[in-house]
Amino acid sequence: MSISVILVALAFSDNILILMLPFNKGFVRKILGVDIRALSSAGCKLFFFMFRSSKMTSSWFVVFLCLEKFVAVWFPLKTKFICTKRNAYIGLVLVYIFLFSFNGAWTFASRLANGACIPHYPEPAYLAEIFVVLGILFYCIIPICLLMIFTPLTCYKLFQRVKLQRTLGSGSQKISEEVRKTTIMLLSVSIAYMVLVAPITVAHIVFYLQGLNIFEATQPGMVIYREIAQILEQLNYSINFFLYVICSKSFRDRVILVLTCKKQPIVTYQSQFKTRESTIWDTNEASRISSTNSLDGGAVNNFDLARVYDDC
Image (cartoon, rainbow, N blue to C red; front, top):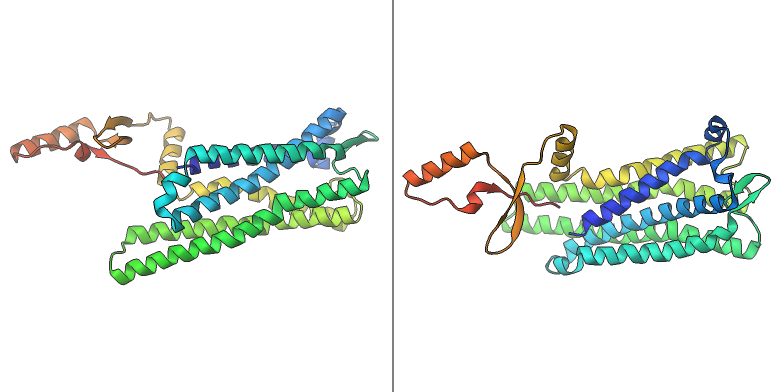
């Protein structure tokens, strides 16, 4: 499945952004005694190039995850052909090329002025305004619109499937639980993104229309709003990854293995259909089952000696 590839890219973008956010804080610059962003003109441009790119790519990777769930629910027979790692890599590369090109062109607006790194230099005014508007569209407005379309459709189809299963009497508690977790996860990510990212987007618009620098404003009301909006934004980038993996048992098992420094008890085996990874029972248990089956005159099948865990 392509979800693992997208999750890695999402975690990468979120972590880069979280690491860069403190350097926009005035108190951090006072503690360090220097504004790292303003060490050079190239450094100023590079900082905000990475800053904007991390924000925008993170938004689009959330959309990719939502689209993958949409395809899996509405077109289950085509999922293995559409939601492949190859297509995921192609999508990621296209996003990186487009957004890196856009933000690379936008670096003209990041300049040093009186020893300070200005992210949105107002000249030339017409060109600067165009890039700000496009940046807001790519960062927030378009992703939110897509999430508002595909998330309800996905949830609707999931509920419809559960209702059909109950009507036919073929539903199971396990399936209903998985549907519930997936639905909650999708709704949580979409709502979290819209609620937590919208305030900072509004702040950028308001500050720009007033001709102010959002990071350098000193008016008490604006400072309070900016700080609250940035905290909410940081929360969004902190929880994106975990909202998607929290429902994965395989992820939790892997975390436990890492934290306890245990070796992963996974080996590979081959069947006539395909090769998969499985967790093998311990030798004593396997021997006991083998002996029991021998006494009963039966044979032990390879699949009886393995527990297969499907990653979502």
